[in-house]
Length: 235
Image 1 (cartoon, rainbow, N blue to C red):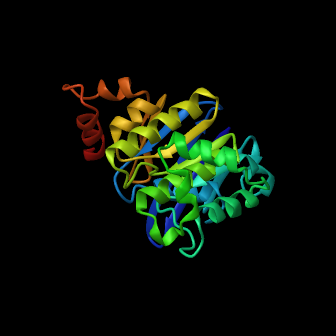
Image 2: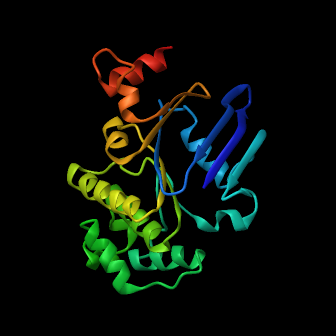
């Protein structure tokens, strides 16, 4: 579904990504973890051609990522999803779906809202009245309504309260069960273990670990994901 081949990106004298090679298979769920500034968001932006490569290749379904055709199967939720504050939730969804060339379906939107414990009546409110968590939910609703094969989610659980996180995890698990390919970044290793077949740890521009959560636990005598993470980052 998604392939990174020797991807390198620098900002000035800082090398953020140093020859990254990674393949994401269709229908899998992969978590990208790492400390702040590890290059997780940069990898997503490169994939979407929002910023340019220094060297290497990115392919989506074997199509070079810079071709518009390649990105037609992708829906993206940025780390800080925001929208024009003067628009209502419904207007935001309608506009985002129009970019995917999909007509807005009120019944489908309400169904997605209920799945995430998001009151459908809130779609009548303007975004200026939304909390960060409400905006995050609205962003995911837009992604799911787009019905794309690949979801790129940058810190999707950030800023959500425990109940909202629960509903969000359940929705991601249901999308995974339906065959949607999930590739998302997170700082919460528990979420990575619960939601993903695979964890990729990015640090200092390189992949330090690539495998299952069980394999990651084996790297720490305590069997703790956090301890294993810290030992790899310390190296």
